[in-house]
Length: 111
Length: 117
Image (tube, rainbow over all chains, first blue to last red; front, side):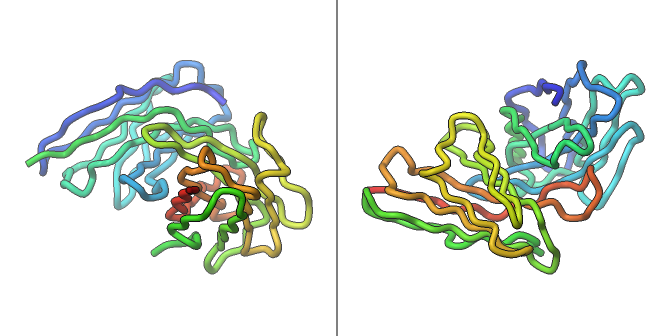
């Protein structure tokens, strides 16, 4: 599975949009981009995933560049409860479903 | 609500004893489940893939005789840490794919905090 690169930490003001970038320049055509987050001492929570089209759900939006080498997770109105480590993971479909976690981005939402 | 349930959430045991952790898929069947381990301030590391009806597949460096996995049914996988030692103290997390598609996302339990004294 392709490796990803994320900034180690980011800060965001409550109520503002949080834009979390992820670089996956070696992604191949059949690899999906998944986003998870982990709040302290809990299991990871699935947020969203996509292949090449932008995706939106009740939690977030996922913007994937046309060349698929990078993506951005957008939390439109961040709250204090969104403070967590956010993981961007790429995985090939049919790869046994398992996910390989990197170090992620620690997002801190502040007043 | 939660789709993967893990029990217990916390356990403290003495060195040399064994501990069993259960992972259940709620309202869906999972022929495959995954067990992860997370040490403080580190990311999740995959330990093994649990397969219903067959042997688990372990990642390199994970001792299969120490971490026994049994996928007893389509909704239950158990991880037994045998002869636990203080260095086995960690956060153990299970997961299962929700949906039959090859790109189905994994859903995770809330983890088990194991402390070996």
